[in-house]
Length: 353
Image (cartoon, rainbow, N blue to C red; front, side, top):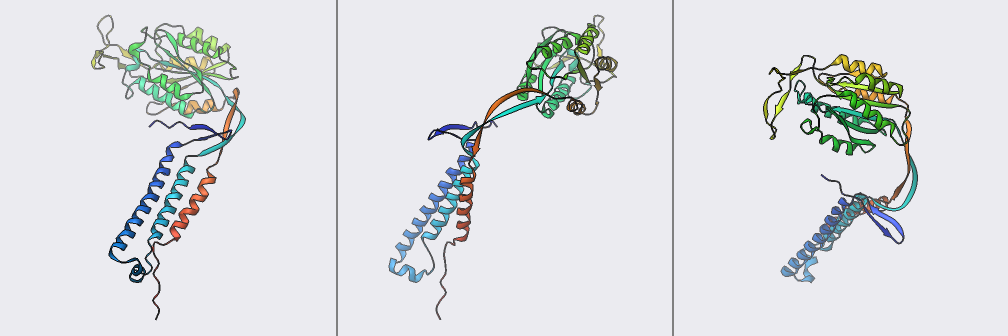
């Protein structure tokens, strides 16, 4: 369900608005309730007059009031209207505040090569890696995140940003079938991740690259990239995805249906395995760490590692806060509802002996 945008307007020169205008439906419901109570009261009065003359109505129906139900319904309706308006969070007046965001810069390098289609972890290595990254985005607070996607070459899928929902949107578009170049070049991804960090505006003191991959590297440029990251003081936290026992790589047609397993030049089925040693070497060369959870999510440990790092001020900006005025309507609404409960629809007079 798409959230309703707040309403903003000006009243007598003051900035005002409703933060949750969807609750205005309760205002309409309260108005309908009050109108219904009035209509039923008038209908009841007309029925009594049709049977009894107005002079005899009090005599034959002692204590039965025509207007009490209408008054009670009106109190309930008006109280509900005020409560609905209070829930809509009326705001009037503004305050300017200086907010500062502290954190570190994190670039995630996501392996999108064909080997990530292997299903030795369910539903596939790539989907598990996406789950790991989504967990990271859900746990981070204040840090900036960038996304680099790689196969035979690497490219920036998302620049550094604190808008985690935007990174999740970019993550959905990652697909090995549309990668411009096949193969796996981990070194290229690490170099590009370093470039993203170096070009950051007001970069953090501590910086991290999170590498999500099965570790297979078919190019062999990892050593140089790792050395460059170490010199720049950037840690690489590697997260292994896959199994060391190995799994064939499925091949799909344009409709996404399974066709066969990938073959090499000799016609043999290609088996892809998690390169634990390679991922561990990258992490240790940069002062980072290797994380692996074959039946769970390893990103929780990565978040703990990031939380221990020194946070820097990444941005500061002036934000406008609106003054909440819901109390002005909630309190009278409560009073009216209580009065509606106290007021009885009818009162019976005690008969005189």
